[in-house]
Length: 264
Image (cartoon, rainbow, N blue to C red; front, side, top):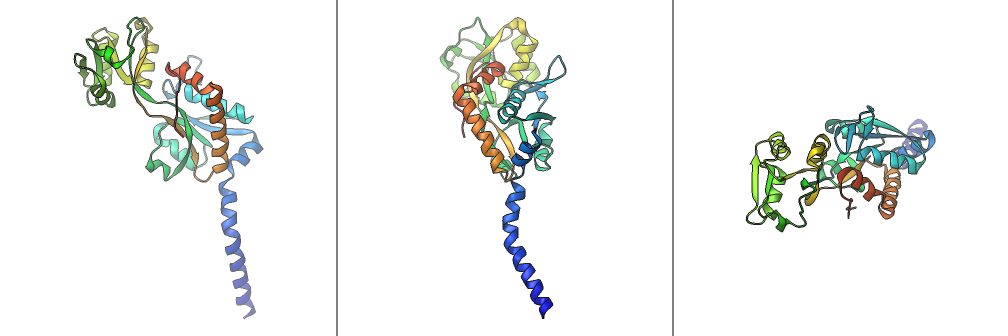
Protein backbone atom coordinates (compact mmCIF):
# COMPACT_ATOMS: atom_id res chain seq x y z
CA UNK A 1 0.00 0.00 0.00
CA UNK A 2 2.80 2.39 0.94
CA UNK A 3 4.60 1.50 -2.28
CA UNK A 4 1.55 2.33 -4.37
CA UNK A 5 1.10 5.60 -2.53
CA UNK A 6 4.73 6.52 -3.26
CA UNK A 7 4.22 5.83 -6.99
CA UNK A 8 1.11 7.98 -6.96
CA UNK A 9 2.97 10.87 -5.33
CA UNK A 10 5.87 10.67 -7.85
CA UNK A 11 3.41 10.59 -10.75
CA UNK A 12 1.54 13.59 -9.40
CA UNK A 13 4.72 15.64 -8.92
CA UNK A 14 5.94 14.69 -12.40
CA UNK A 15 2.63 15.79 -13.91
CA UNK A 16 3.00 19.17 -12.21
CA UNK A 17 6.61 19.66 -13.35
CA UNK A 18 6.35 18.60 -17.00
CA UNK A 19 4.17 21.46 -18.27
CA UNK A 20 6.73 23.93 -16.90
CA UNK A 21 9.77 22.00 -18.06
CA UNK A 22 8.77 21.83 -21.74
CA UNK A 23 8.80 25.59 -22.43
CA UNK A 24 12.16 25.96 -20.72
CA UNK A 25 13.64 23.39 -23.09
CA UNK A 26 11.87 24.88 -26.13
CA UNK A 27 13.07 28.40 -25.41
CA UNK A 28 16.76 27.44 -25.36
CA UNK A 29 18.05 28.96 -28.62
CA UNK A 30 18.54 32.57 -27.53
CA UNK A 31 20.13 31.53 -24.23
CA UNK A 32 22.53 29.24 -26.05
CA UNK A 33 23.45 31.95 -28.57
CA UNK A 34 24.17 34.42 -25.80
CA UNK A 35 26.16 31.84 -23.84
CA UNK A 36 28.32 30.66 -26.76
CA UNK A 37 28.46 34.08 -28.48
CA UNK A 38 27.68 32.25 -31.73
CA UNK A 39 24.62 32.14 -33.97
CA UNK A 40 24.23 29.62 -36.81
CA UNK A 41 22.34 31.06 -39.74
CA UNK A 42 21.30 29.07 -42.82
CA UNK A 43 21.83 30.98 -46.09
CA UNK A 44 21.70 30.21 -49.85
CA UNK A 45 24.65 30.32 -52.25
CA UNK A 46 22.72 29.35 -55.39
CA UNK A 47 20.22 32.19 -55.61
CA UNK A 48 21.67 35.59 -56.58
CA UNK A 49 21.29 38.37 -55.58
CA UNK A 50 20.11 36.96 -52.25
CA UNK A 51 22.95 34.50 -51.85
CA UNK A 52 25.80 33.39 -54.10
CA UNK A 53 29.53 32.76 -54.10
CA UNK A 54 31.65 35.77 -55.04
CA UNK A 55 34.94 35.92 -56.90
CA UNK A 56 36.70 35.53 -53.53
CA UNK A 57 34.79 32.22 -53.10
CA UNK A 58 32.95 33.66 -50.10
CA UNK A 59 29.14 33.84 -49.74
CA UNK A 60 27.63 37.22 -50.50
CA UNK A 61 24.26 38.74 -51.23
CA UNK A 62 21.29 40.31 -49.47
CA UNK A 63 20.59 37.30 -47.24
CA UNK A 64 24.24 37.11 -46.19
CA UNK A 65 24.28 40.83 -45.39
CA UNK A 66 21.13 40.36 -43.30
CA UNK A 67 22.65 37.40 -41.44
CA UNK A 68 25.79 39.36 -40.60
CA UNK A 69 23.70 42.40 -39.63
CA UNK A 70 21.70 40.38 -37.10
CA UNK A 71 24.86 38.83 -35.68
CA UNK A 72 26.45 42.27 -35.27
CA UNK A 73 23.36 43.69 -33.53
CA UNK A 74 23.30 40.71 -31.17
CA UNK A 75 27.02 41.03 -30.52
CA UNK A 76 27.80 37.45 -31.51
CA UNK A 77 29.83 35.66 -34.17
CA UNK A 78 27.93 34.40 -37.22
CA UNK A 79 28.42 30.90 -38.58
CA UNK A 80 26.97 30.75 -42.09
CA UNK A 81 25.40 27.38 -42.87
CA UNK A 82 24.88 26.78 -46.60
CA UNK A 83 21.50 25.27 -47.50
CA UNK A 84 19.35 24.65 -50.55
CA UNK A 85 15.57 25.02 -50.79
CA UNK A 86 14.93 21.36 -49.90
CA UNK A 87 16.82 21.31 -46.60
CA UNK A 88 16.22 24.82 -45.23
CA UNK A 89 13.42 23.82 -42.89
CA UNK A 90 14.91 20.45 -41.79
CA UNK A 91 18.13 22.25 -40.77
CA UNK A 92 16.05 24.50 -38.53
CA UNK A 93 14.08 21.62 -37.05
CA UNK A 94 17.21 19.59 -36.27
CA UNK A 95 19.01 22.60 -34.74
CA UNK A 96 21.72 22.68 -37.40
CA UNK A 97 20.73 26.33 -37.73
CA UNK A 98 19.25 28.88 -35.32
CA UNK A 99 17.74 30.96 -38.12
CA UNK A 100 17.01 30.49 -41.81
CA UNK A 101 17.60 33.56 -43.97
CA UNK A 102 17.14 32.07 -47.42
CA UNK A 103 14.41 33.76 -49.52
CA UNK A 104 11.83 32.01 -47.39
CA UNK A 105 8.20 32.81 -48.15
CA UNK A 106 5.53 32.41 -45.48
CA UNK A 107 2.56 30.14 -46.06
CA UNK A 108 0.10 28.09 -44.02
CA UNK A 109 1.87 24.78 -44.57
CA UNK A 110 5.23 26.09 -43.40
CA UNK A 111 3.65 27.81 -40.41
CA UNK A 112 2.62 24.38 -39.14
CA UNK A 113 6.26 23.34 -38.66
CA UNK A 114 8.27 26.55 -38.12
CA UNK A 115 7.72 30.12 -36.95
CA UNK A 116 8.51 33.32 -38.86
CA UNK A 117 9.79 36.76 -38.02
CA UNK A 118 8.38 39.85 -39.71
CA UNK A 119 9.43 40.35 -43.35
CA UNK A 120 13.02 41.53 -43.89
CA UNK A 121 13.25 41.90 -47.69
CA UNK A 122 11.15 42.02 -50.84
CA UNK A 123 11.05 39.25 -53.40
CA UNK A 124 9.42 40.41 -56.57
CA UNK A 125 8.73 40.16 -60.26
CA UNK A 126 9.38 43.31 -62.25
CA UNK A 127 10.04 44.85 -65.64
CA UNK A 128 13.65 45.66 -66.48
CA UNK A 129 15.17 47.65 -69.30
CA UNK A 130 18.11 49.83 -70.33
CA UNK A 131 18.70 53.02 -68.36
CA UNK A 132 18.37 55.00 -71.58
CA UNK A 133 14.73 53.95 -71.94
CA UNK A 134 12.30 56.03 -69.87
CA UNK A 135 9.54 54.02 -68.22
CA UNK A 136 7.58 55.79 -65.49
CA UNK A 137 4.26 53.93 -65.54
CA UNK A 138 2.61 50.92 -67.16
CA UNK A 139 1.10 53.25 -69.75
CA UNK A 140 4.65 53.75 -71.04
CA UNK A 141 4.68 50.09 -72.12
CA UNK A 142 2.52 51.02 -75.10
CA UNK A 143 4.50 50.49 -78.28
CA UNK A 144 7.31 48.68 -76.41
CA UNK A 145 8.36 45.04 -76.78
CA UNK A 146 8.51 42.94 -73.60
CA UNK A 147 10.09 39.48 -73.30
CA UNK A 148 8.37 37.10 -70.88
CA UNK A 149 8.33 33.36 -70.24
CA UNK A 150 5.03 31.82 -71.29
CA UNK A 151 2.84 30.81 -68.36
CA UNK A 152 5.18 32.24 -65.70
CA UNK A 153 3.90 34.52 -62.95
CA UNK A 154 5.38 37.48 -64.84
CA UNK A 155 3.33 36.55 -67.90
CA UNK A 156 0.13 36.66 -65.84
CA UNK A 157 1.03 39.94 -64.16
CA UNK A 158 2.10 41.72 -67.37
CA UNK A 159 -1.17 40.69 -68.95
CA UNK A 160 -3.05 42.47 -66.16
CA UNK A 161 -1.28 45.83 -66.46
CA UNK A 162 -0.01 46.19 -70.04
CA UNK A 163 -2.05 48.70 -72.09
CA UNK A 164 -3.28 47.98 -75.60
CA UNK A 165 -0.43 48.34 -78.05
CA UNK A 166 2.15 46.60 -75.84
CA UNK A 167 4.02 43.93 -77.81
CA UNK A 168 4.38 41.03 -75.37
CA UNK A 169 6.70 38.39 -76.82
CA UNK A 170 6.32 35.06 -75.05
CA UNK A 171 9.08 32.44 -75.00
CA UNK A 172 9.01 28.83 -73.86
CA UNK A 173 11.64 29.00 -71.11
CA UNK A 174 13.69 31.48 -69.09
CA UNK A 175 16.84 31.02 -71.16
CA UNK A 176 15.04 31.92 -74.39
CA UNK A 177 13.36 34.89 -72.69
CA UNK A 178 16.63 36.25 -71.35
CA UNK A 179 18.45 35.65 -74.67
CA UNK A 180 15.78 37.64 -76.54
CA UNK A 181 16.27 40.62 -74.24
CA UNK A 182 20.08 40.47 -74.14
CA UNK A 183 20.33 40.15 -77.94
CA UNK A 184 18.07 43.15 -78.48
CA UNK A 185 15.05 41.28 -79.84
CA UNK A 186 12.98 43.02 -77.16
CA UNK A 187 13.34 46.35 -75.39
CA UNK A 188 12.23 45.11 -71.99
CA UNK A 189 12.34 42.00 -69.82
CA UNK A 190 9.67 40.86 -67.34
CA UNK A 191 11.17 38.47 -64.81
CA UNK A 192 11.95 37.76 -61.15
CA UNK A 193 14.54 39.70 -59.18
CA UNK A 194 16.95 36.75 -58.95
CA UNK A 195 16.98 36.15 -62.73
CA UNK A 196 17.31 39.86 -63.43
CA UNK A 197 20.27 40.18 -61.08
CA UNK A 198 22.16 37.46 -62.95
CA UNK A 199 21.30 39.01 -66.33
CA UNK A 200 22.50 42.44 -65.25
CA UNK A 201 25.68 41.04 -63.67
CA UNK A 202 26.64 38.92 -66.68
CA UNK A 203 25.69 41.48 -69.32
CA UNK A 204 26.92 44.90 -68.21
CA UNK A 205 26.88 46.11 -71.82
CA UNK A 206 23.06 46.30 -71.84
CA UNK A 207 23.11 48.71 -68.87
CA UNK A 208 19.80 47.35 -67.56
CA UNK A 209 17.97 48.43 -64.42
CA UNK A 210 14.76 47.88 -62.46
CA UNK A 211 11.82 49.77 -64.00
CA UNK A 212 8.34 48.78 -62.79
CA UNK A 213 7.06 46.44 -60.06
CA UNK A 214 4.73 43.63 -61.14
CA UNK A 215 4.26 41.65 -57.91
CA UNK A 216 5.80 41.70 -54.44
CA UNK A 217 6.27 38.50 -52.41
CA UNK A 218 8.33 39.35 -49.30
CA UNK A 219 10.84 37.12 -47.54
CA UNK A 220 10.70 36.14 -43.86
CA UNK A 221 13.26 34.68 -41.47
CA UNK A 222 12.53 31.15 -40.26
CA UNK A 223 12.76 30.31 -36.54
CA UNK A 224 12.22 26.93 -34.89
CA UNK A 225 8.79 26.34 -33.35
CA UNK A 226 8.51 27.64 -29.82
CA UNK A 227 11.64 29.80 -29.91
CA UNK A 228 9.65 32.95 -29.13
CA UNK A 229 12.46 34.71 -27.29
CA UNK A 230 14.78 34.47 -30.30
CA UNK A 231 12.00 35.47 -32.70
CA UNK A 232 11.15 38.52 -30.59
CA UNK A 233 14.81 39.57 -30.48
CA UNK A 234 15.19 39.29 -34.26
CA UNK A 235 11.90 41.13 -34.82
CA UNK A 236 13.23 44.02 -32.73
CA UNK A 237 16.43 44.14 -34.82
CA UNK A 238 14.43 44.16 -38.08
CA UNK A 239 12.10 46.88 -36.77
CA UNK A 240 15.06 49.09 -35.88
CA UNK A 241 16.69 48.38 -39.26
CA UNK A 242 13.50 49.49 -41.02
CA UNK A 243 13.35 52.65 -38.92
CA UNK A 244 17.01 53.54 -39.53
CA UNK A 245 16.80 52.86 -43.27
CA UNK A 246 19.29 49.98 -43.18
CA UNK A 247 16.73 47.55 -44.65
CA UNK A 248 16.13 49.91 -47.58
CA UNK A 249 19.89 50.28 -48.12
CA UNK A 250 20.37 46.51 -48.32
CA UNK A 251 17.52 46.16 -50.81
CA UNK A 252 18.83 49.06 -52.90
CA UNK A 253 22.31 47.56 -52.94
CA UNK A 254 21.26 44.10 -54.12
CA UNK A 255 17.87 44.56 -55.78
CA UNK A 256 18.10 48.04 -57.24
CA UNK A 257 15.11 49.36 -55.28
CA UNK A 258 14.30 50.14 -51.62
CA UNK A 259 12.46 47.50 -49.59
CA UNK A 260 9.47 49.81 -49.11
CA UNK A 261 6.58 48.74 -46.90
CA UNK A 262 7.12 45.18 -45.71
CA UNK A 263 4.41 43.21 -43.87
CA UNK A 264 4.63 41.92 -40.31
